[in-house]
Length: 177
Image (cartoon, rainbow, N blue to C red; front, top):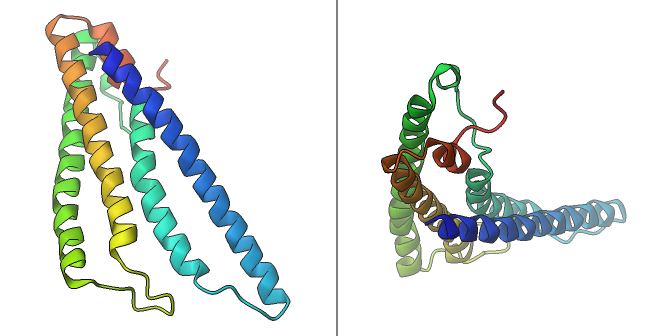
């Protein structure tokens, strides 16, 4: 299971680079739009595309935050516990995170399915087929659910073998003293 966690981390590292590049592209697109407006023209649709990019990159980026232990947690009590207690809190937080990701991915499919069946388009000049950004957004949530579930399975196995140090390395809070 440890090699699976390492694989998830490597994949998420690469996804984070891709997300960063997409965001840089969006910034360049916005800068070009600003210059074009100064010159009396416009590309059009930058605000719409930027909104889609933010939603999509966020849904994919949260998996990277998970594997880098960068999700915000209030750990005042956790810091004062022995390794067993910290591991219990880590497992509880990962259960909540995985559960939330699974529910959002599951419910998100219903939204995407309805969009696909109706052929819905954005009510904008671009008339973007909404299934495109929704599919990319939903896929990010599915990946987050998969990543969180794999980490949870690994953490539970480590916990059952009393390997609390590994639980902390996989799911602990970063930045603790």
